[in-house]
Length: 128
Image 1 (cartoon, rainbow, N blue to C red):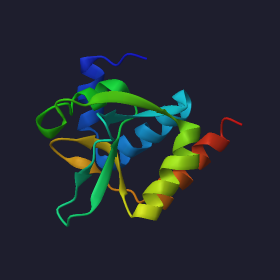
Image 2: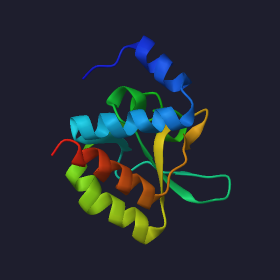
Image 3: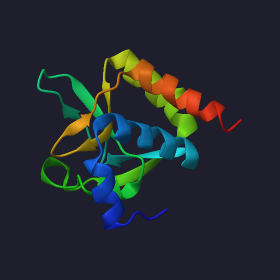
């Protein structure tokens, strides 16, 4: 499940909707996604002060964000079932935005919790 530097550069150059689609397909295909962890999950904020939970489709993308305040964080996989059963309900309950394909330069692809859950479940249904 290794991503080359060339692949990383190509994916990060895609417009936001295509990166989002890539995220959904990869996460459902592998049945996991990645976040950064160090005695708690890494979070960020929007310009409006809304809390964001950064998420990536593969470890290599998460590793690109291990700097600054996150220098001690490590990529941690989260099983798709846990995302659907625990993480998404927690984000919804606490009003935290999912930071799909977060980058230090562009922030993340805008998606709300309900949209992310629906898109993951729709893609998952194709595999059943």
